Length: 154
Image (cartoon, rainbow, N blue to C red; front, side):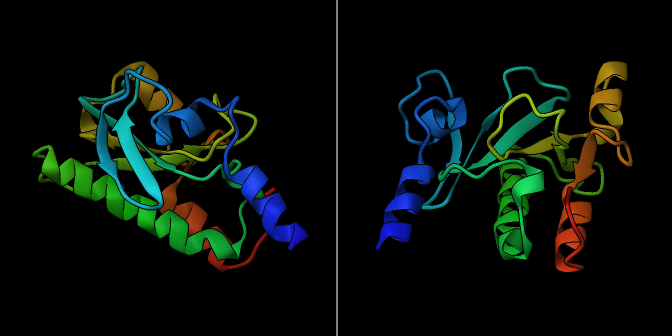
């Protein structure tokens, strides 16, 4: 029973902007998707014509706090991201970038998937910030692969 109440306490962090957005306690974020587990909204500093964030409703830490148990959550986040892109008339799902900033390069310590499209239209700075195979950004596929292989994420 104690573990359940501990989990409940960690499910929402009132100091976390993404927890507040996900629970509709923060105005200004237009929900592009909301279900029982995830929400999606536009990034306030877009790096591409389409730049969305997919965020778990419960407070989940950054990439380094994840385990193999989080693989399905990540796959669901990717699925929501692609679905929102398609609803916003992005038809070329080959020209997208889906990924996470790697700690300590996270601006917010609540897991959030960056969904960017078209990747071919990323500006110079955005190409650096969301750079594949960098030590500060990991693609969703790379993170899922790493967790499935059960290798350490630290």
